[in-house]
Length: 271
Image (cartoon, rainbow, N blue to C red; front, side, top):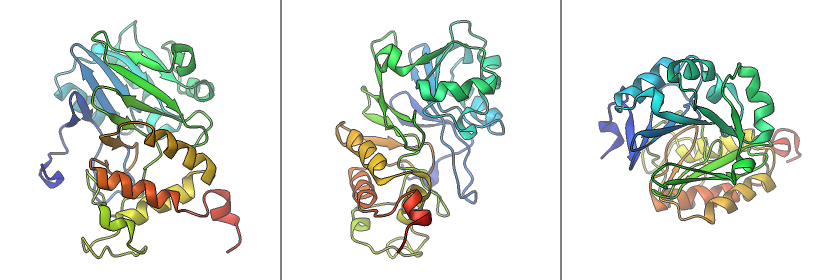
């Protein structure tokens, strides 16, 4: 299905039992992507979003047919307010005494300041995984300093979807639900106007985001190594467009590995 046919007022299923439940605005320039994983009568929510987006996210969750009380875990892949800000609202609506929050210990130090009431689990204390009752398994992959010390990714072993947090994120002057990046983008020189789509280049948005947000090339390459170790069908970042083809994933990885100056060197390094 072409992404232009999607009704963004509803949740969008990107794989078996995996729903995008975010807020879409083609003019926003910066998108946050919460994801809901539903397995029988259990659900997990990844990076639930900001305070402002709470009503949108929760409405879409319920429109999937999911009872909020069936959400067993809230997973937070780092601690920024754009993905943690609505935690108190989520806890209040879910209203489940068995609810737990999952993150890395480096993040938990800060997440507690969002007035968290639920018990928190460090990924390292639960063997870097969560299993649904069915046996469906989510694996947590630590990728330090992409962009925070406790940043990690979540990999669904059933669908081969990897939720990459800020890695593969983008500034989106030309936002689309699924990225327009193709194999052609591996050899295209950076330009404002895309010669293939006659619109603002999505690869530029991807590259610019990583130059500004990632602290170092070593940290980014470490994260990319972890992605390439997995069999990946879809990359679902917290910001920007979803990568749902082999060509877009390959092109994005290649161009990100080519970056010379990232983070401090990008902002203050010599030419």
